[in-house]
Length: 201
Image (cartoon, rainbow, N blue to C red; front, side, top):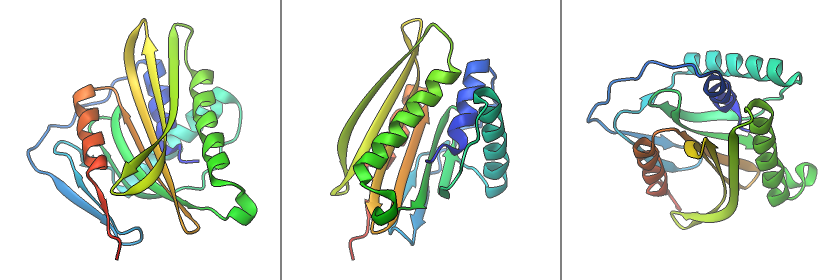
C-alpha cells in the first residue's frame, strides 16, 4: 500500500504543525518514466522531493504512524517520482509488484487498500472531523484507473483532499497519490495528472 508520505501528512495535520512554503516559480518541469512510458508536466511551484528527503520523511511518517496506532507498517511500494508545494499539497507516483496468482483479484486489492487508508485516517483524527469517500473509475489518456477519493472536513469546512489512482500494468501496480489542502494547488495537480500521457508504442 502506497502510504509513504501520506502518514506524515496525517500526523502533521492532526497536530496542527506548519511547514515552510516554497516560493512559486513560473517554470514547469516534465517528468518521464521509461518503465511505464508515462509523461507528466509538473505544475509551476511544485518542487521535487529528493530521494534523501523522501526516505527521511518516509521513516518519520512511518515511525509516527506506528506510535500512534501501536502497529507495524509494511512498506512495499517503490517511488517513481514525488513533488510538493508544502507538505499539504503533494503528489507522488509509485509502483509495486502485483501477481494475481498470489495477490488475488486486483479490484479486491484496491478496495482493501482504500479501506486501509480510510481506517488509518479514522484512527488518527479527532472527534469533530468528518470523512467522506467515493470509489469510481476515471479515464487517463485512454486508460481506465481505479479512483479512490477521500475528503476530510473539520467544522463543516473542507480541510484536506486525497485522490488515489491505481492501474495494473502486467504484474506491476502503478499508483498516483494526490493530496492537497489548497484547492488552487490541488486543481493544478489534478489537471497535470489528467493531461498526462502514456506512450502506447
